[in-house]
Length: 237
Image 1 (tube, one colour):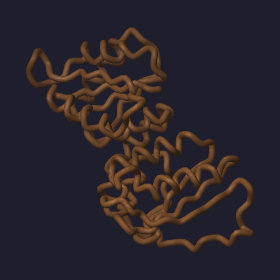
Image 2: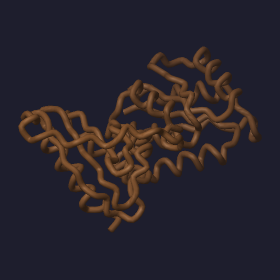
Image 3: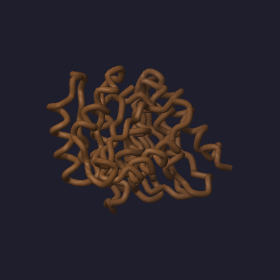
Image 4: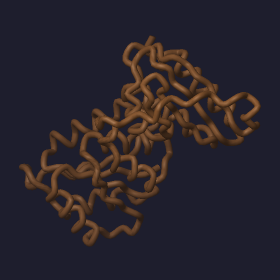
């Protein structure tokens, strides 16, 4: 599992972003270090950031998430000051959204590279995107043993908000099949079910029809697992 370092000019902001993100995961939580504030005030300290990175040497890599431009400069300097040699990526994603994406992705066991991309694209869920249009369900004869599909209607009151998205990412991580989700009602998608930001970009509300597609040796089981989450309202009913 990767580790995460939050670099902020405000210690209170860093703690709040961490606590919000951790609400999305429960059983498995990634290691998070905070390097925020300078000399007890506002600012960033490259030495403190380097120390936070060095504390995560037992992880599979570290994603550094920053708030303002000068925090990026301090983080870059920290890479020269650190003693460890494990891989580190400085994210260019928005602080709060990237932190949430990183925590969910790390808890699901995603790689540092995948999580860095998801964190970088963390604003996509807020952007208005033209729909690709709903696609017709392929006939059963077009599906082989390594492909499966299903469609279900969302029944939970708030649709695919952050917590159901986190559950979907966790579930997707339990299968080798690649899982994609499409909001056929709104014409959004498909998106990778291992990306919390992608799932949120579907903007799926209650009663929207969700298509589940999987491709891989355990595709039927993967589709059924996601289908059950939808039918159970992600535990929110």
